[in-house]
Amino acid sequence: DTDILAAFRVTPQPGVPPEEAGAAVAAESSTGTWTTVWTDGLTSLDRYKGRCYHIEPVAGEENQYIAYVAYPLDLFEEGSVTNMFTSIVGNVFGFKALRALRLEDLRIPTSYIKTFQGPPHGIQVERDKLNKYGRPLLGCTIKPKLGLSAKNYGRAVYECLRGGLDFTKDDENVNSQPFMRWRDRFLFCAEAIYKAQAETGEIKGHYLNAT
Image (cartoon, rainbow, N blue to C red; front, side, top):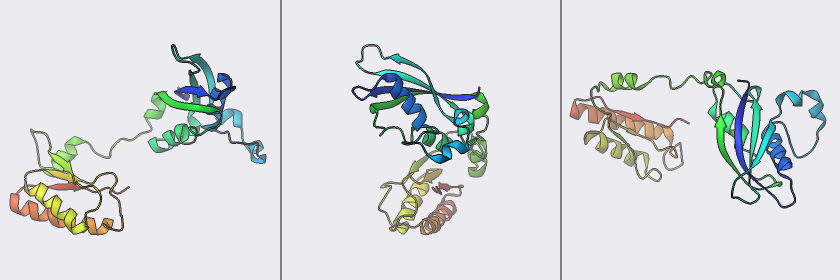
């Protein structure tokens, strides 16, 4: 209940003991760095560092091991998937002691899971907003996801909604690129929604990527 547990498949570089490779993964993904610095003495590294508590060979694979690493929960921001994965896998794959590394498994304590608030509302609120009940909601992502002008993007949204879809959405790659700024996309999508609603008599929607 006090640690996130990770299982890494580790292939050490020739001449590097598996114990050293496992310890390197634990250190590099928590409090360690490539050298000792004077600020190490200003904090309790023993309290915050990741620990490789077990290593076992992978059956049938030469020079591959499963390294089990425990990370104290204090290393992670509450309710942040991004921070958790950045901390655990964001800086270890290019480590010199390793020839190959893969995260195989992750065990997250219930106490940490409870810090995630989840989406601000669920499917029932979506149905209420769209006034659609008793059937699946039908939507799509606008394609091509990159390259359309804001005006043509809005045109595609309109055609989809006018054709019977309940909603459309941005692809995760669509943000505020030079060829289609976010505000322009917002305005043309809003125009498309209102036009489709007026012509169909139904409530329509578009999910804009705001990340």
